[in-house]
Image (cartoon, rainbow, N blue to C red; front, side, top):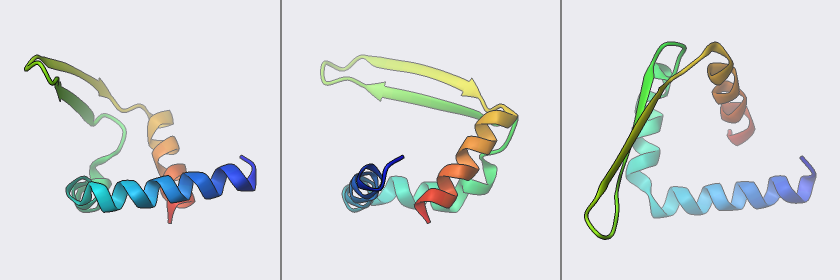
Length: 74
């Protein structure tokens, strides 16, 4: 990643943190649970009232990626 892209990413993450403090607090409080075998569920409630749901189980590679992101963002 070039330095300009890294600066843009950092700026966007900081903006996300300001706009969605509950998400950031939730992840900060529960980040230790993001390990191999954990299941992450996503639910989107659309503007027309539908619910779209999916989930996935974290693999060892996913856990490595999450740890790398933690290092990049700290």
